[in-house]
Image 1 (tube, one colour):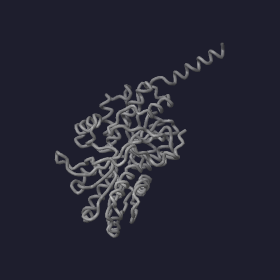
Image 2: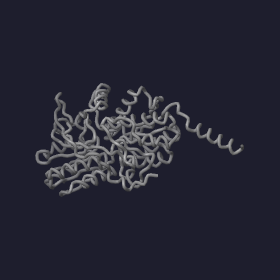
Image 3: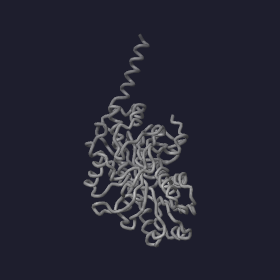
Image 4: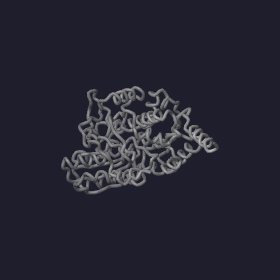
Length: 388
């Protein structure tokens, strides 16, 4: 009888621990100031738009979103994350743009057994040997868009290429991804400082190699300045410019304008994708913010709907980490990019597309989808992931 009563008591304690929450707290740390601010702002605006469409709720529970600016500084980001985890006791975290910041924040998040839903940063470390059950990436693995550009440039027969990218984990993943599929000559890999805005020296190096194409990955204000200076130096007359989508998206186009016309880029999403979720997202984003959304905004939007579906799946019992992980893995929401699934390392398996910058039917300079580069494409690191 004593053993039976003990078992019943234990069962009641477990049930109590898995009671539904009364609200869902989200810690949103992102780059909201400095050269990379446009990226974080778009993720935030996409995320907030989704929360608004969900009636201020996640999984039918009131949502409290606490926002902090990491100032593109890993130490600042870690301090903000630690506060959210220990003091505010958030149920989810999201928002980080840059991989070096994600790598600084990740250990504290995982140790706290809090699920991180990445709306951008996708470092190779967390896709491979350091994969973690508490990390999900709803965007991509860092290499993927660069792989797509490399594949397209290889197929088109470019023979002599220069690469320009920042010297940080995301930049190194960019080069690795590009060279995984581009097998032609790389005349030089030029690594800049993260946040650099003057490229006179780098453009002189580019000119000296006389390449037929240049591949660059320079997020946010870095890319804006680079393209302006590239065109002003007259290099666009002889060198075809290529980039991943995040260096050629609506935030960059809005700042640079006509000089970007004719530039090719890769993406897993575009605002002209023909599905009901995307049409609603683009229309509502334009109405709310008076600008076209970027892929960053689409990822923030998807991150919110992913949380919403998972919380609803577990009926608000977010303390049941095993059930919540299974719910997140199930991906029971409709993405604005169309269908995709999560691989065993919690990174997407999805399509990647070619886009070109030109004028649309309304005369706006913007991206137009040209075709598919990869179908159901997975990252290169998943085999090294031994998910525990």
